[in-house]
Length: 258
Ligand code: PAF
Image (tube, rainbow, N blue to C red):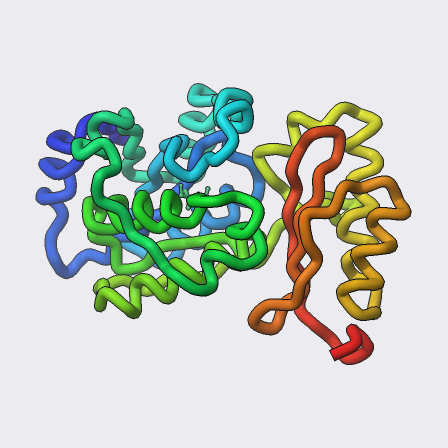
């Protein structure tokens, strides 16, 4: 498995791959868990070459303490990638990926302002900008994104269409713990008591009732609710639990008040 930390090394390695080979990319911010593992396994199955990027992208953090507290587990990430048969890890520094220091960026002007975007100003500019850079550098045939970040997935798909980018975005189902909490790198920051309480989030989100009622139920359960809103066939929500921001979404069904 190659570990490439500079753009030059990455591009040199990428140029050795024959054009007829299918390259897959799993973009991540590291702190890998079983959700990422399922993305990597699918990327491995569906492509000749499986690549992953590990980069905690500062431009998508509107809250500096969230960035400072973002878990960093490079040795464990490398071991997981090795075990899953990843061919190459791209692990760049900010200065390499942002030679312009973020003077240039990708902005979507409608849907990126809703839901998470309404609570995290600039977040999706950072996400779309880094994803475009990673796709341009990796030139994958397929790129794998988890459905847990539903709004991110829709915006990335829209960007790829808008800019005629030669890549297929592959959505992958959310992986959940036994108590249905969606896997997230942020879950490790929950105290044991808050971890137990967090199981109420997916349980209440699945309640067949209008979004406003679900929002009230979550608040009554003691969660600080950023939003509960229906978007592109899904009920999406973000809450704070013990100072940790959690997001989730589920398909809308009859009875949800639509
Ligand atoms: O979903 C993530 O981990 C990040 O938003 C992504 C897509 C890797 C961009 O930094």
